[in-house]
Image (cartoon, rainbow, N blue to C red; front, side, top):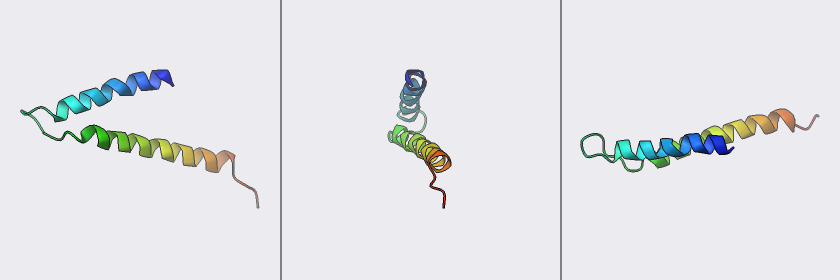
Length: 58
């Protein structure tokens, strides 16, 4: 888990740096959009896992 956070942590910094530069696009909320997308992926993986392994037979 630490290796995943070590991978995505600097990515968020790079996203923030890329979208707050005056010469390029200016969108300081970009890290929050990326964070929401990553949260959506995590919830999807969780839902698939729970449905697959913890389903109640009829």
